[in-house]
Amino acid sequence: MSGRVVVTGADGYIGRRVAARFLADTDTRLVLTVRAADRAELDAKTARLLPELGPAADGRVEVLPADLTHEAPLAAVTGDVTAVVHSAARTAFDVSRPVAERVNVDGTRRVADFAARCPALERLVLLSTLVSAGLRTGPVPETALVGEAENANHYEWSKAAGERLVAAEFPDLPLSVARLSTIVADDDRGAVTQYNVFHNTLKMFFYGLMTVMPGLPHTRLYLATAAFTSAAVVRLASADAPTGVYHLAPTAGQALPLTDVMDTAFDVFGEDPAFRRRRLLRPEFCDDATFRHLLAAADGLRGSPAAGALRTVAPFAEQMFHPKEFTNDRLREAWPGMPTPAGLPLVAATCRSLVATRWGRQGADAGPVRAGSTS
Ligand SMILES: NC(=O)c1ccc[n+]([C@@H]2O[C@H](COP(=O)([O-])OP(=O)(O)OC[C@H]3O[C@@H](n4cnc5c(N)ncnc54)[C@H](OP(=O)(O)O)[C@@H]3O)[C@@H](O)[C@H]2O)c1
Figure (spheres, rainbow, N blue to C red):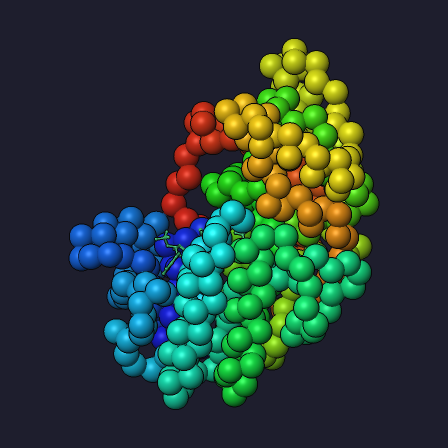
């Protein structure tokens, strides 16, 4: 791959790893954009990012400021851009609708607008999420979203809206949409350096703050590592990977039933003496109506840890009642040698590292960003 590749949100969890992977797997030069209000913030972010990328970044990387809420965020990027990987986003499930719209929808339009002005562009890879499918159930193919679906939260809505608008307003762009799984660990060894609703839900169970699990036992979880995901993104940014929609996910057969994930987590928790001393029962699954009832009750208990626990899980819980079967045939075809997801052993390794570090509070050392093994 010659020319330069732009990665937005390059100091984010995935952006950093995608940058590291490009440096490890290709000889391309990189333009890494970060959000920075002023020179001092840009310098501080650059000073953190470059050492993380290591010597491979020497002479190949330029770090530029780009705020997606500004009019032309990538105007300072010059030269022969061959690919843009759009990773920047507001990623919290409880993001407000106006912020999600401004950053994830309007910001994506601005990135696409920049990409459309790059004469040498071979790929725009838009990082999206499997849950852009919303609250539908059943098979979800690797194709553009068809029809409307309710969403569990504004984050999901904004990622779907971003996908739709680029496809509709920029039909001539060489666009690939990479729909990411829920990332549970940096790699198959299970170390966790970014915490999301998956980890936070398990934490509530470990400390006994939640006693029911909202969802259907057979709903399958599509889990992946950051190493797998970043390798896939770099693969899709190559001109020889066809454009289109990809699910960076296990097959539906490899995806894990919620009940198996819970059993594995509790088996690992049971290895911990402090957890055993609490003598907690394994949670029962509860239906949607019961969970909503609990949430409504929690509204009246603002300060209680249990109420806080329920609210943490709420923005994602509805998905647990909407089982889906994602295909990944296109990804497997475009990525010869694609590693097989680790499945329950990954869940076990992740839970062990969560317990050992008490969810990052003890002995957590993120260390440098590694491109990482994907197998
Ligand atoms: N990690 C996952 O499990 C997962 C799953 C599915 C999809 N995805 C998608 O993958 C992409 C990367 O996710 P991530 O986990 O790396 O997220 P992340 O760690 O939250 O990083 C997001 C990046 O976007 C930047 N950003 C936020 N608002 C911005 C703005 N207004 N202008 C410019 N940059 C802005 C952040 O900068 P600041 O730090 O300065 O805010 C950060 O660098 C996102 O598009 C996300 O939707 C991730």
